[in-house]
Image (cartoon, rainbow, N blue to C red; front, side):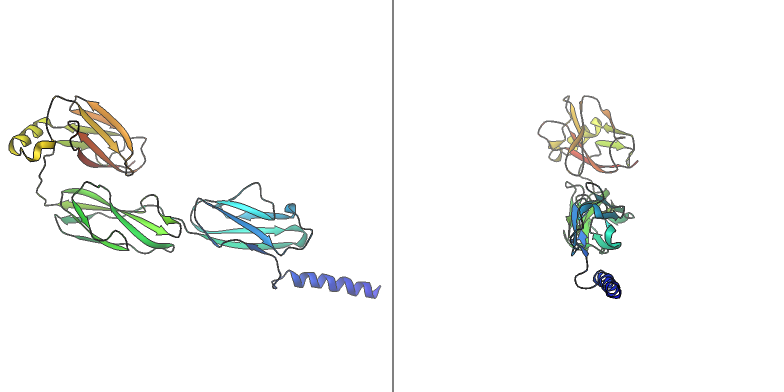
Amino acid sequence: MKNKLIIFITLAFAQVFFYTGYAQSPYISGSSTACGYTTSTFRIINLPSGITDGDVVWSCSDNLYPQSGNTGLTKVFNISTNGESWAQAYITPLNLLLDKFIFIANWPTMEIHETEYTSCGTPVFIEVSQGLATRDFKWAIANPYVNADLSNEYGFDTEVTFYENGTWALLGFDITSCGEAPAPTHLYWIDVSGCRSSTPAVVVAYPNPVSNILTIEIDEEAIKEFEQNNAAVAANLKATASDYDVRLYNLQANLLLQQKTYRNTIEFNVANLPNGIYFLHVYYEKGNKPIIQQIIVQH
């Protein structure tokens, strides 16, 4: 009897000794970093024989979602937002809890910075702080048609110079181990004044920013007067009896709204468009270059 008791105690001690942190202890395999809106697979390693899928119960942080229930020796998780996350596996027969910590290197949400004010042709220096997961940074001028210069397309700082009056948008995109952000992560407004205008204010769009109804007014008299005084420049701005083609595009150059009309005033309902930067194109004649204005939708 005494020998049997010694053997039982020895086996119990060996089991505790085996499952408390030594080289062959069970652990959760899988990467400790991941990208948002992807999946990650985790597996329990070094389990003794006899442990089945139903013996392992998983729990996780709010930004992980287990596929096909919460049990299994192997578990695939859907990943949502960025930040720190964790997964735990409780092995019922062993009364053992295993932890796995994961850093999700996603892109941050867009940060809108205070407006910078500058005069025509004066460079504005912009610098962005490097985020925890950011490896590089990309810059872009929102309106591709505006007369402007950008000193650096990549890097954590740049200089932008505008040669047209108006409030223009400079966009920044974080680049992480998951690649370049699909949408801007930084927005800088640059207010420019002091430039001589070479084209008339023939199109007025208001209010801007707009949340509901955008009104577009086309000033035919301004076009006619400009044509008389600037025949060479006015070649693309002819006022005729033909209809106007008015279009609204997003940053990805997708056509969202369009009206063809003979009227000088039209309206676009933008209530269902998400907040962001859009471009209004107004064509006067087929084949002519459009007059382009930057529109901000802000609800």
